[in-house]
Image 1 (cartoon, rainbow, N blue to C red):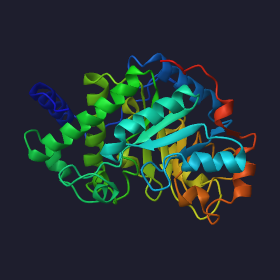
Image 2 (cartoon, rainbow, N blue to C red):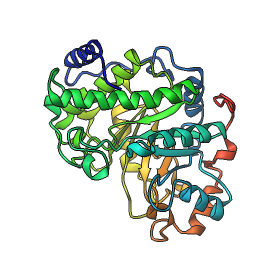
Image 3 (cartoon, rainbow, N blue to C red):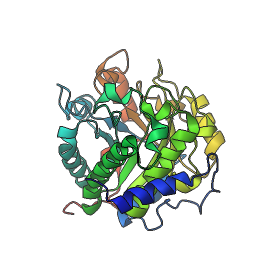
Image 4 (cartoon, rainbow, N blue to C red):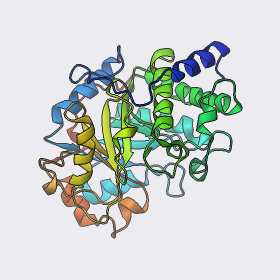
Length: 337
């Protein structure tokens, strides 16, 4: 979808008013940033808060269009653990698969699961795909109304808004995780420092919330664990869940990373491990490492014994700390929506 001239000017002009390092004070406890969230998003967020600090949701990223196919990870977990993760991660990375991503997300929601979505957004003036997401893009120009970079960026942002609107209309709440690992320097959205990133976040948030009325989104702000820098925090008025990720070499609880995020958001926001390799040992998730969820990456990260053995997965998925799909309540689900 192309933005109208009015939309383009309104969104771009609004982004220019964002203070570079301004944090709003925490909003009233346990409320989503959207002023009028969908019933389903509000119910899911209330559930997240109800378990935070006590239990942890299991999560798994699907492999999408890789040769293994999108169900390979779920099939493997079902085979070795007898269970499925509570959260399924999907990615709008491949344009030809985006409609199918929405179908898989809808099916997962209607079957009782929780959906999280990210977007490996290829540099808007280069092309799509993972490798292109790591190429540089002139973010300052993209934040300037009237430039080619701004037009390309806003057109693509609007296209993904259209995709998310399909899920909204199907009453699917989404843990929306844009610009992930923004405090690293490997993706284009992290290459230009914290102020440029925050303007990107605010631009997308306000466009999606105010103009596109995507009230099914729960906004997940995910640092790269190598650099949990408070300068990147967009503000309590535009974030629902905070998080960080790091592909550790063991099954430890990554308490240091948890503490670094908590030093920024305190008790105002729940904290998740938005990606991981080895699944954290649930026996170590005590005070100081109370991750709301983990989400293991796809292909080798779940299947390679150097990352997770079948026995470890079986034991961890069967622990009382971890919540699997069969244990989720049905409060925000609409099987025939």
